[in-house]
Length: 114
Length: 114
Image 1 (cartoon, each protein chain N blue to C red):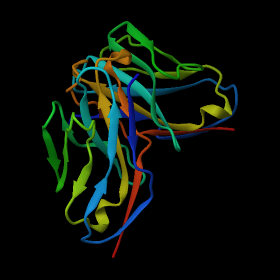
Image 2 (cartoon, rainbow over the protein chains, first blue to last red):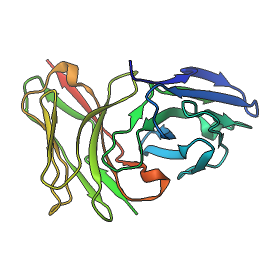
Image 3 (tube, rainbow over the protein chains, first blue to last red):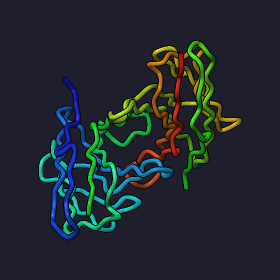
Image 4 (cartoon, chains in turn blue, cyan):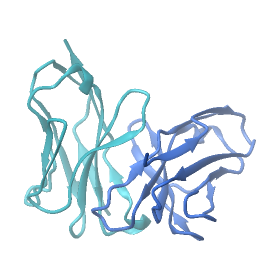
């Protein structure tokens, strides 16, 4: 089954404790991205990757890091989480950057930073 | 830059009522337009899309027509069911930065009652 898988789905952590949210897709997609969803703001892009070893900032990259060492994986790293990073996070992938290509989303990771 | 404006919710309807959720956009060039749905506790699923002007996307009884002259992509369904209760996001993907990222509206919550 074609899917984007994220882990963990739910996490409560403390300020400053490094964490990683993993993302994996089995569709051989070139394009991967992370979004965060906040009430009243919709979804906003954090980082994206056009291919292995190619990553770039989205609209709200502060406080986050990513890496793309393999085509299927795109982990999101919070080096020193803060309460304003409490949010619902989505990993996404797409065959390429053509605007008509559908972007597929994972089920989301609820992150609470206390 | 690109932007999407959709009607505020929540929208509450009785079962079998007609649904319209308005969506308008601002974009350079010729974006593709999408509706995504988020059921309670779940991730984002593609509902329908249209990639060029006058295209009509349809799925599960929902329809939306890409109107370039009015820069709109309104979502409609003739007879809603309780199972349609969810949050609906209008989005566009165009020739922008972010690897041609999706730009989302803020979402419209739909509640359907018996």
